[in-house]
Image (cartoon, rainbow, N blue to C red; front, top):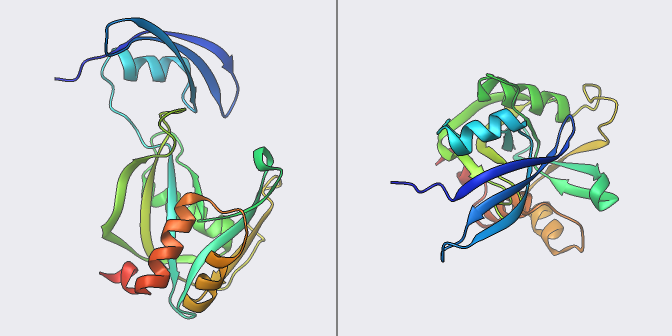
Length: 203
């Protein structure tokens, strides 16, 4: 049976997209300690999860997409304010309240790249992975899929500074060897693509 070590949750900062909490918890020796938690969830939702046993819902989707016509992996190069720079990533986006992840996947891939889903591989990926568990309980569903169409930026929101990119296997290998800022999820999928090619999307 799971033991709840968190005894108290105090909101520190509440904003539209990110919240900060001070969590009082018992360490392995039974001593009370504090831990700073960043979360996309509001206080009531997070408290329900910690104290009332509410199920842990996925916050986002991360999309490993293979473009069938060009035999290429889909990446985006996006400006991220915390880095004050551009970074290579996989297409991704937040799941709306009570939204089916398949709807999120189709919407976010279209919005960030202009491409359309052909097929989602239900045997690969994971329904819930944790992104930085030392800082946040935020989780994402990693999805492998095939897609088609032409790259476009016309569906981007005003504050999104994104360039969609198609990289074939040789280009992926070169990109891995360049000194570029890269998201760890994109790095791992790129590495798998270089090693195994399109098989990682179809096995």
